[in-house]
Length: 185
Length: 129
Image 1 (cartoon, helix red, strand yellow):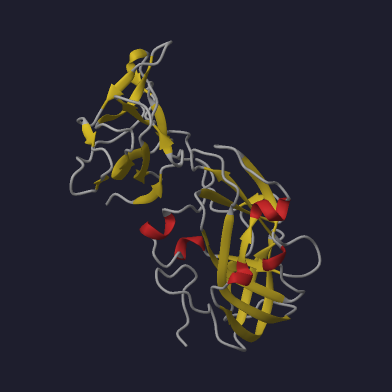
Image 2 (image 1 turned 45 degrees about the vertical axis):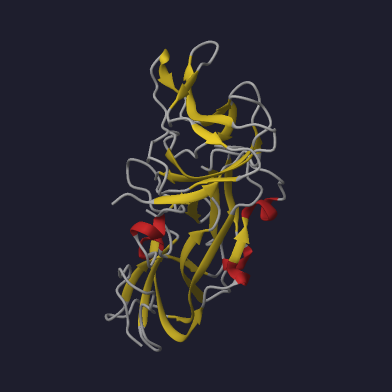
């Protein structure tokens, strides 16, 4: 299988092969790993999440926001890495935070989100790529959204697909490691 | 490149009354500016006993909002399926104009019927970010 660069503008593919090495940015540092196993996570119902069900609210007013919510479906076990692209199904704009409050896709001017128009400009959703590193401490991803539909909505669904990697920690970063961010900075 | 999403009008089935009735509220983009909306399809059911003229437009921002017609009059014939599609309708953009009072537009889609009782459903194309 072809190995991609981090944000290749095309179909998603693994960012390395089995037994290759990664350096993952999380908790403000690069951490070394060897990849032991890779499997795909196809787009499927299990990974389409309704944020309003997750939060237990019934309706979301026009322009209203849901704060970042922990999404259990994309949590990772210790020494595992989730590699995702994501999309929205309802007329919302989703926002991503990692390590609870570190905004992703956030240049100086604001934080970008993912909405119904994203896949029209970026059909493979390459610009929505993010990684979730499992392990001790809160390394999880949180998703929030804004209702941009103009009216009250009663569903706010986001979906994820990608790859799952099982990792072996390494005491030092391998010289051939590929570097990727599982946290904003 | 302009990209869009198409929706059924958010007000659901709209029954025209003597005043102008809300058909659709376009979504907002992240900077809270309303999307442009274009009507792509209208279905109107008229069983009032006579033809009813429908005017589609938006509202100005006067203290007592006034109707602003944006499409030509459409005649909904009695007991006939009245369907206007993209081929029939000019691509008039319903968008908000933030000027004061009569110069402003709220950008929402309204219908004003010459008589009450026509039931309307529309398809709206929204352009936005």
